[in-house]
Figure 1 (cartoon, rainbow, N blue to C red):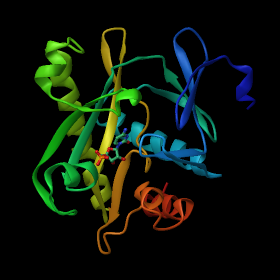
Figure 2 (cartoon, rainbow, N blue to C red; figure 1 turned 135 degrees about the horizontal axis):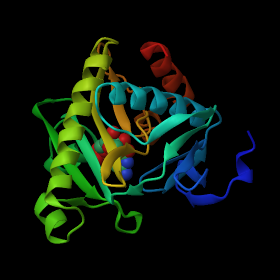
Figure 3 (cartoon, protein in one colour; figure 1 turned 180 degrees about the horizontal axis):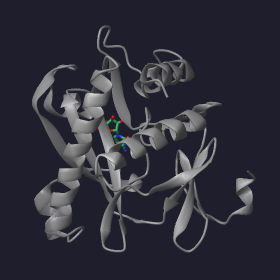
Figure 4 (tube, rainbow, N blue to C red; figure 1 turned 45 degrees about the horizontal axis):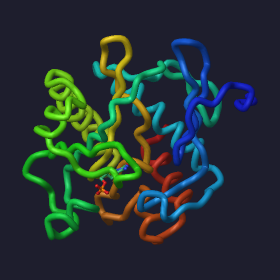
Length: 235
Ligand code: C5P
């Protein structure tokens, strides 16, 4: 598929969005990888198609369990067709274990299982470094209405149950992840991606990362680990 014949609407750090028709877009997964808000970047051949495959699989999995997503159908190795949503400018982060910025912020050790899953929000704004934002500020700035905010939390926690159950059976810990949502007519749909770029996955026995921390912390070959994750989830 020659994707370049479609009109590009947007280019992000790891994906490009093309117009498919008035209602639908093509989401194309690039091989580019970035960390620390774009300070570290590379192109790693084969990453895009792995992340597209994993995202498609997880979107279909959660959709089957009642979470509406923007996924419509597969297009090719690197892309799928999706409903054209208006992205809500919030990153919804769910944490089951301590890691990453949570450890830095609160001065806690990595790898502690949290008593309850935590849902956090960040303002989606690269120029500000996606700052954490609390629910009061979200509502006071009118970024979303209260019922939408409640829906985001409900979906994020339901997705947590679905993914954690699935991954536990594969001996993988779902440490934390980031979700994005979009508005489509009056509905809230899960959007963007669920992949090793946006989640932390640890092997349950060794606590080794099967995600982008391998790249962030330079502790192995990204394609090897992403392929290992694919093999483990058996898709
Ligand atoms: O960096 P932090 O620990 O807050 O990240 C929590 C989770 O959200 C990680 O799985 C990370 O990959 C994901 N994340 C993301 N995009 C961001 C920020 C975090 O995918 N802009």
